[in-house]
Image (cartoon, rainbow, N blue to C red; front, side, top):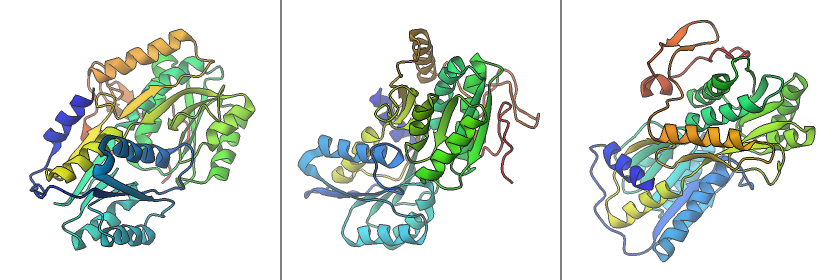
Length: 357
């Protein structure tokens, strides 16, 4: 599976020149995390990627990280400090880090920067993201099979395209097996606030949702579902530790292979700015870790559809697709292209909560 990632990286490289000086001393690599480093969630998965780099490269790399760094001025200060300290490659995995990363990169042309979830590149700034929506669609299939109320709740951070992709793919996955399914959304307008995440989950369950999903940074939604005897889809990490019976499945992000390849490229002097958007096929997104309440038949169905996505036989955004306002978004037999997915600014039919304006 990972050999496809290498091919994708080669194909995605831009015309920027390589940094041709191979490292003789250990490569100093740093990560900046937007939330505290907890036992599960967004930052945890990126730190698992950092640890994978250490395991793979051993004495060839020296890593560090800074956690709980707010987007904006704080991020610029931390990224700049890491560059001043002599780090040769700095990974900044949060969308709000994109502009601070670019600003610092202009002042440190010899340092390589990796803007994870960003989309703006420079000769010393690469971008990478994952097709999270593929995992969302698969989880939606499981949720559609498991719900009894036909109501799902979704606790979401910000109404940006990445989040809208996830909500829509989850809804389309649910309705592919359960046309009566509906999804309610609560917007938090922040990534990490466990008390508010928990309150939103409880509100959605009080409104009839018996299955929950989330695009936030903690495991609070999973804990709330476990306490209420409901079901939930873990995001970023396997969260069975806190939701042993509530978890339907986990959509996990696998960054270790990508990070290792990029640090190794710095060491070898072959690093180039690139743009990668990888998913199930490349091993960056995986759905597994099914909970005990999920029947074997549902597990087999989800895993089969995962194989279909990897093989290119299934596209989560294949038509016909209608949005929540009744407008056609994809005709039968057609699939949204990457440009349409990346600029997504609508909600799919079945999402009953209006898009914030």
